Amino acid sequence: MRSIWNGAISFGLVSIPIKLVNATENHSISFRQIHTADGGRIRYRKVCELEDKEVTAAEIGKGYEDADGSIIPITDEDLAALPLPTAKTIEIVAFVPAASIDPLQMDAAYYLSANGVPAAKPYTLLREALKRSQKVALAKFALRGRERLGMLRVVDDVIAMHGLLWPDEIRRPEGVAPETEVTVRDAELDLADALMETLGEVDMDSLQDDYRTAVESMIAAKVEGGGALPEAEPAERGGKVIDLMAALESSVKAAQEARGEGAEGEAVARSGSGSVAEVTSIKGRKKTAAKKTASSRAPAKKTSAKTSTKTGTKTGTKTSTAKKAAPEKAAKKTAAKKTTKQTTRSTPKKRAS
Picture 1 (cartoon, rainbow, N blue to C red):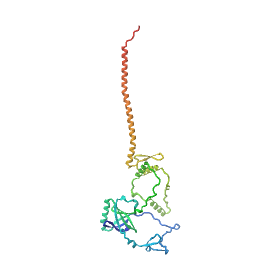
Picture 2: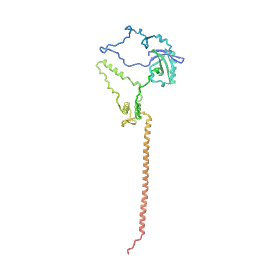
Picture 3: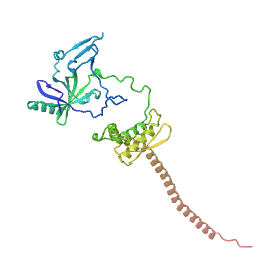
Picture 4: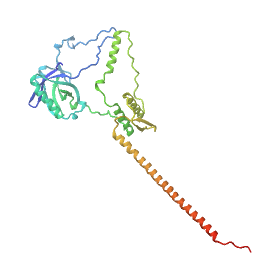
């Protein structure tokens, strides 16, 4: 890869000669401006407004426009004479945890390559120190006429540098968040969690630019001449009022079907309109949700168990009492019959006069 900047990393008193190369590349399709009437190219020419004539690149320099509109010429010699230690040096100023860097500050990415055999040892030393500390290095460097902030980290066996925006270049998100107060219910959060876990992880290498693919297919069809152009599916208009619970439920089911996952349980959520939506739970659902569901159902089971025990005890008591009472009644009845017979025998009959 071709280097875009040569210099050194300043690591305390250690200087590491390096070359800077781009870590990314742009694959987007570019278009030319044409005259729609005849297809001719539209080109831009650099013209001096005072002389009204085109000038060459060698005749073009830099200038700063002052507040009153006057132009102050700035030469390369003026910039080179500035007391800027980072003009040819990536100066490390601190080592910090990677989590302390706001992703909003991330800019272009570069690879740092050791420049020459003597640079291999200090380069490897810095790389291994970054690995062992599990930190990133904050650095200042100058590129394309301005001083920048950078973050050095290890990627495989290479030191990579991300250009960072200065903190005052990050705009505050004022007026961006919804101004109206919105209440999100636990049932809606449960469905959102289910959708997030169903979508799960993705292989980054499997992602591709579908728009670029479609543009290439369209261009190929035009080159062949008369070929059928790909038709776009009608896009749904935004801004429609939707049932959030139903939309989440449908999203979860669609994601499960796309991944071929089966049902392992059910979670029931009630929407704001009072209808009940049954949502199939997914593999890997959070244990806390399962515990919460189990704990919410436990009192009902306990109550039913108590009721059945209590009922069974009363029924059993009545049954056993009835069983005990039956023999006692029979015994009393039998004794009463015997007593009656004996009384009848012992009483003499009156003779007729």
